[in-house]
Length: 599
Image 1 (tube, helix red, strand yellow):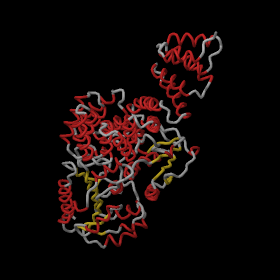
Image 2 (tube, helix red, strand yellow):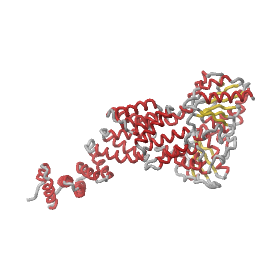
Image 3 (tube, helix red, strand yellow):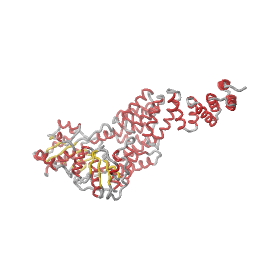
Image 4 (cartoon, helix red, strand yellow):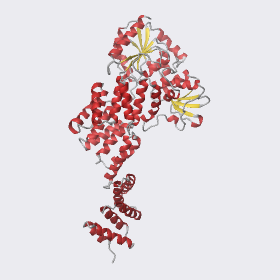
């Protein structure tokens, strides 16, 4: 008499696994084992610690009845234990598609998080993101999924969404220190360092005093507040706890770079890059450090990796489909160049598009709309194309981002194209402005006290908060006699002109684009500006410029010098202390007084 499936189930329930397995094997040998029997046999073999045999039998069960979800879940468990996570994930996805809410959802979420973690550690955030989103949608009882998803969202440029996810995690799991630590990092990115500091101190004080990541985020929050010495001590403490903690190395390296401790910053960046997960961020920070130090051979080469700072978008969409121009002799080539980053960067490096044309290339330059007319006036030989205008790759041999041209040309400090002026205003615009400017009796000085905040970009917003000032901070300029101040300030900060601490001529309502600004600035004796696009415009017009630079000044201004090879008539006035404009404004006031006296 043949054994029955029911008898095998009874033995299985009684824990008689060997007898159950023998009975099911006999049933199969007789050709009487259906999908349910095969499933039970596979489970029995698994209980007997015979996973390879169990997997073969479960595969047969699934082949016989593809809708047998529990068999798929049991096979997935075996695959996961044997290290075949991809097969396990495929099986569990099938289960959860057929049976939403299946108990295997938690296991699938855990596997997805495990698959995403090394991608996050390797800074491959765009690849990790859909895995983590899937994990969270499947099962919210995996708090690490929410914590990791929040951090990943912040890395792909969605810090506001990251904050929402992490706050949801803390609502579900109060005191989950991973979520708290990651939320602190997000709050710092969102330029709320005081909140970040408080959260880190809560993690350290109440939950995880030895969590190096929390100490690292605390250091970052302190640095964002300009508490440099405290931040350094905290970063060093984090590295003492976890010597290979890459974010702590990168943050401490950046702090040393800001303070001018170049040997220390280089050592840390190199250490971080030698880690298995050194990451593109470290390469970018190291590039800026080398450029600022004047090591342009290393700096420009490393700066080629800057695209990694835009992990989910193509920073140069206009160049899609075109091979990258590798450098060399450009004669006879048709090369499409795309501007990038802000208006200031486009103005600063515009000279390289002209240099490319001077060396025999046919050059197209994809350009932000506010700069189109100015660039056309300044370089009639270039094809100036408004950004986002569709281009046909068949019209071009190569493409290249604008800020890659210094590397392609092998630019060094003593070989940069520095002939001025590189911008030419419209003579008709100049003629229109001239009566108003000529009517001013004193030294004619343009003022720009703030940059563009770019609220969609928290990193740029944070930089702008440090580089910009209020107009009232320039009040000492009122002490200089024989000066007429002219506003060149656009955007929301321009409203401060209504309460200027000195007479201020504001004609900016008549400025429609950068060509209009260029025409007005060309008639002025001097421009005083923070580090923003108008400073590059005035420098490129070969006008005298007094530039007020933040404490952690941009790499382009190099270190420890009050001049710049980029613009021969520009002088730099640097902050001595974080966020303190007192000393540079006093120096600018003295420089302005000397100019006014010698006029």
